[in-house]
Image 1 (cartoon, one colour):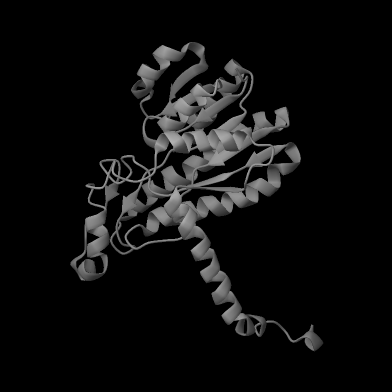
Image 2 (spheres, rainbow, N blue to C red; image 1 turned 90 degrees about the vertical axis):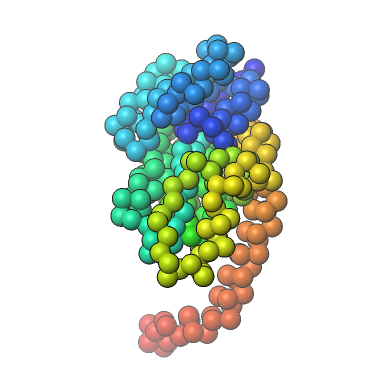
Length: 281
């Protein structure tokens, strides 16, 4: 049995809950947070003090710091943070309301930021730790009808890249997790949807239909296996900076990267011409 302590946000269902179960099966201790931690009571009853649950709204920065500090004092350490809390927002860029856009950023981006900031003092003092911000293959590429969701995940990717370089001297590792479609409620009742504008019916119609909730719990990805994969990464002596999860993500991301490399090469002369010539520098 390991003495590692994991802190997992957004653990009430989906990938978060599956990860908690995988961590417990591996013998580690977990602090699982959710807006309503009562949804984890069934797990808590079977694992004693190896599973602690806490109510937490990650958009409340003060509450995030309070819970993390309490956990650190109670357990003596936090070895792994999985910043998983988040949800999907469907709607064209012009369709989403200000309230919807702000809420998406508050939960998916700022919620992760507050969680990361809160655990860093403990991990720096330990001189070790592993941070797993949960992004998405939607943090590598983008699709119509989910622009604000992609904005939060691309933002999280950039933040995490900078963070990884800042905390490496303290023995803290960062692995950005990029799942594809997994068999959860992400495309179901947990997804918020903007009111459609008829001007976009032809453009967004197919994506709206694909995201009407009927595909929830039919996706090819297995949340249990995703949880086990994240445990393997934390166990590794040489963990990756990015972890793609699922065949769709594993196939799509390299194609997108190659397209960008090819486009950059095709337009390199134009890019270079924007500099002062060598004899004028």
